[in-house]
Length: 244
Image (cartoon, rainbow, N blue to C red; front, side, top):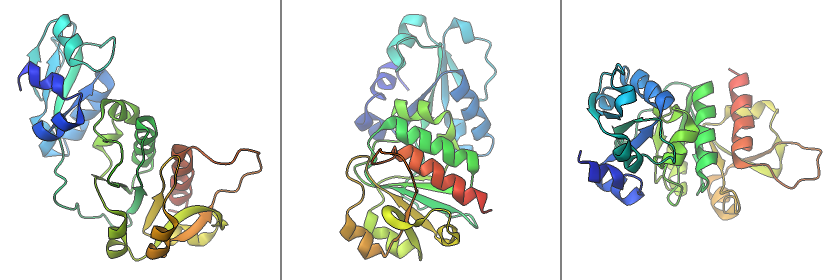
């Protein structure tokens, strides 16, 4: 890919048009290389390095650039000097679910840090799939990729999944609500899909009613009105993993 095209990958419309996204920094490139051993499509990634990384061992086609060029390619202000251009996963075919897999559906999540943290949690526990509604932050946004710490390579991910389509895919759906059953109740682990709402607006109640989503709550004794989205998902993922 031409350097001028790589610069464009900072923007969603060009990531979609060119079918690639950026991975930056030693840790993320190492995670990418490990993931490529199990996911052949990732082997088409290409590496761009400055002279400081000219001896980096990689299975990818590698290009050396100068520091000025790296500064133009990278999304961070002080780049380490190593980044990869990675092919976007195909989203036109619904990946087959693994036995016992749970789906985490995020409705119009907007914060890149929240999404990256959620992906990191799901990758840590394993056995989860992440579904994103239309209008959600792009998971291949450089900020999401960095916040995921490489988890984006290890969690099955689907984008632009309509909320209404969940009823056709999953027999049993759960959601969070202040008036629901406690998270620790045994029935919480029995559902197939767990729906979480936008950081500010949540999920439309009429949509949850259409899905017959079972409500649960995370009990708290403090004065604050709500939990951060990523914190809520983290607690739910822990509770689900604890029952395995």
